[in-house]
Amino acid sequence: MLVVQKYGGTSVGDLERIQNVANRVSESVDEGHQVVVVVSAMSGETNKLVGYAEHYSDEPLRAEMDMLLSSGERVTSALLSIALNEMGYEARSMSGRRAGIVTDEFHTKARIESIDPEPMRQVLAAGKVIVVAGFQGVNDDGEVTTLGRGGSDLSAVAIAGALEADLCEIYTDVEGIYTTDPRIEPKAKKLDEISYDEMLELASLGAKVLQNRSVELAKKLNVNLVTRSSFSDAEGTLITKEENIMEAALVSGIALDRNQARVSLGGVIDRPGIASDIFGRLAENQVNIDMIIQTSSNDGTTNMDFTVPIGELNDAKRIVDAFIAAEEITSVSFDENICKVSIVGVGMKSHTGVAATAFSTMANENINITMISTSEIKVSMVIDEKYAELAVRSLHGAYKLDQ
Ligand code: ASP
Ligand code: MG
Image (cartoon, rainbow, N blue to C red):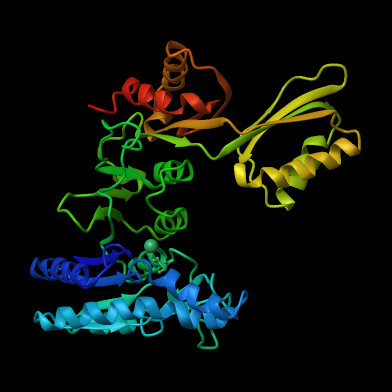
């Protein structure tokens, strides 16, 4: 097999941990695999470098930030390669440039445009392990670029895609994806496998184990992803195409998002185009709307409720105020003490009664649902934040996720 293994900052956090990674890599080689390793900077290193730059400037040139920050990953890649060679495993480290990673020109948040797999293929063909410095590439002018914070996952997925690797393993300090947050429900179970779409729903809903950008890229490039821990031998969770999933669960997981607020608009003038005007203004100002409810019209006015991330509430207020000043909306109220609980599962597509179970579970706990939205593989409910954990635990039990 050809495997790409990505080790995050904590996994390479000190010299001993880098040795631990070298041992793991050597085991994969002994098992007969070709291995491309992608590494992050040692934990805390990137922040330290940012701090150095801030000593001189509040707004350092982005190109210089890329020069500076890309060095953290290069340090780790060279050290890991040195450790492997010392153990008798031939290895070569590569910067993003050597690995053929070309990005667009946007310094500090560049996107990968292409990867020339030839240089890596040659080194692999010579029987060597490759250790790529993650998080970086070069633009058309040959300047080093970085991919945005946390970007080495993207490097790994893109490299796995370009090399048509059999597997891309993302090593962190958690053992995989769980049916829900184990801090809320200790009976949460690690999932063996989950589809890209379920993972995207769970991630955007708060189960932040993997960046959504990386999962989206894996889906696009058809890369089989595994998240697992570098500190244990546990198997991890495979994230793959829905067709590859052996047994589609009715519900795979329960996600909780506490970071939402509700905006309630009263006396909204009910004319064609009003929704487009309000939500168009919000979108132009980068306010992310999630759920929207409009009640039926009464006396030419209507009520509209929607949710926004708490951090974007002030922007939303400003925009709504303009509509109030224009007398198109009469009143507005805000509620930050809400949360969104969601059940996610591809099995919902082919079964009925999944949403009904969620509603009756809330009813049994006497929890009031104030907003509902559904998609093919998700049911989301807005409830009072003080019932967040109770709701998650009850739903987890109701769908027998602990069994
Ligand atoms: N070292 C970079 C960061 O801390 C990239 C990464 O770790 O993925 O953001
Ligand atoms: Mg990271």
